[in-house]
Length: 92
Image (cartoon, rainbow, N blue to C red):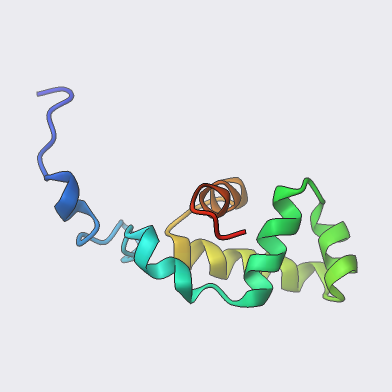
């Protein structure tokens, strides 16, 4: 039946997504490293990966890896989604 919820909202966070990650973003957000938070904040300010790498003194590849890690922690799939969740949850 379209639109019907099969699992109560309060129980959804206990179910892992298709990659095995849990979607409870509020409890896992504290697992972000300071470096990941800084990178997310710089991206939220509109900087490119190259600009973030330059400011943070990292390679662009390392910046991308940190975003991938942050995405796993936050349960997101894309950089934009990770930045949006970080901003929405006041992590940056």
